[in-house]
Amino acid sequence: IARASLKPANRQFNTLKSDYEMTCNHDTCIEACDADEGQNIPQVQFNFIPISEIANRPVNNTCDTIGVVKSTSDIQTIVSKAS
Image (cartoon, rainbow, N blue to C red):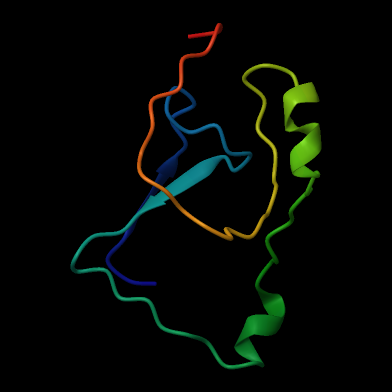
């Protein structure tokens, strides 16, 4: 990765577990590494939870989840008691 900036994560806007955040722009260059070079790169760790458990998570807590979008519709406004 070339011509990108790496800085400490701003906890006000970034709730991910990483201590740093990378910013890329139109000058950033990202190249794939070969298999031998990739052996020493740490892998991203996920802690997936079922979508059905999201409502049971503490407020302002991050989590990893995954799903498949089967269909889409027009944008709708949702009114929540919490908002």
